[in-house]
Image (tube, rainbow, N blue to C red; front, side, top):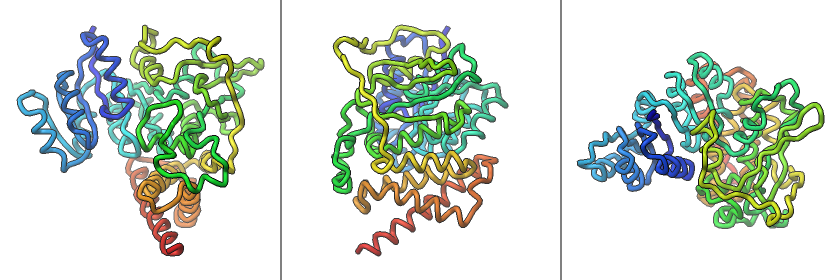
Length: 394
């Protein structure tokens, strides 16, 4: 039986790995929608290869380029935020949500409203609107499957288990490109330094988030929202080899760990084939060759993002949306060279503090509009704070 699939963020690493798996069993899938950003050439190639019904770029000014690249193909083309939502409204059995950032939130919501399976690789959806997203899935009989390697590992570790017996959840972190740098040198780290990830081949923004541990901070919050686990039961450890992706601890003292080579096709394939397990073209790990698996506690002086995540989990409400938006602004500022690597967490902290005096961060997120309003407010305030810092140091 042919399954219809849509991939939001098709030109990124998650999207490309998803297409790689679909390509290997092409007759089993019908591609409905593919979306991307500025890389319209890749988007057009994929849309032609897979015979997509529609290809969408999120950038309005790239519509003509996409239209030219797909001329004569029979693939419909569109651009912009509304086009993304319209693509999400097209019937599909399985939708991959892999757009990076808050831009991925609305398409995921629309996919859920049609009672579909949503494979969630967009961290920001749960961080900014976790309770709302889970309620939306329940209301429409839809299923959300985690695609972050850590949350997929937790999900698999919980199959057949009683949640009341779960004592702890441990998610692992590579520590990123700067994990072994002396603390006093971190302020000097450049974008190139932060992008030199030792284990993973990912996009620029995700790789820098790995170096700052903001990605792990987001994942701590995701764990709380997806699985409903109390924050004091969620831990993070540095694991340089990236072989163990997560562990679940139970009331009898047992730990169940998920191990696999650092290849996102593990988690993507599990979500694509769930509830079955099927062959995946990934490396089979050789424990004798690896020999040693290392673990160490993360230093929250080095990685202040983890402390901020704890604060957000304690506050909930609108705090997640503020945290994520401020984090994205801070990363933009670092990429632009206006703040240092070590200034990113301080900017996020300052934004949370400033907005805690302007709005009630503990107020529940009651609609998608509230999330987007909070996101806009936080971005505005974070940008203002960044500008103030630049003026003070000029």
